[in-house]
Length: 108
Image 1 (spheres, rainbow, N blue to C red):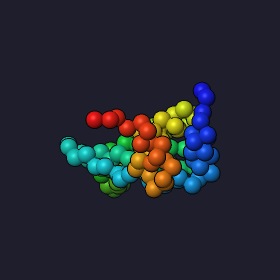
Image 2: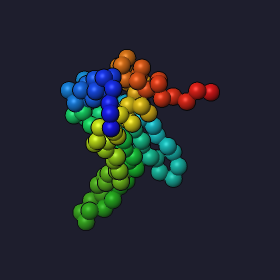
Image 3: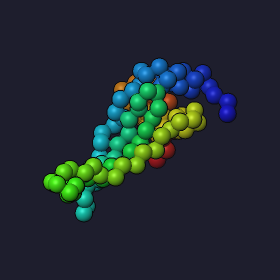
Image 4: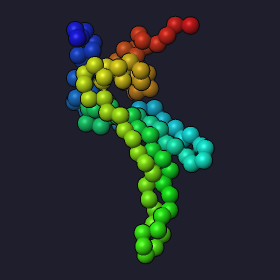
């Protein structure tokens, strides 16, 4: 895949750790149990996750808190990282990421 200078610069920012942190807000979807969804960047790798609500369970002696099921999607290749920036870059506090993401927003 041929990359532009802008894409190379954004990937360099990702690997350097400048863009690390929470992307957007964590969303809570209520239902039978709450489901927490969110996105973050850690060590230059974007991650999208879904986590179920924790429950109380008995471990044989006492009731303890058991964490909910968690599933993560890692964006590990350059193409997937750029796709993440195209889709969620507008949620970041970086003007280059917002500008790049704006190019891929649908026009109404």
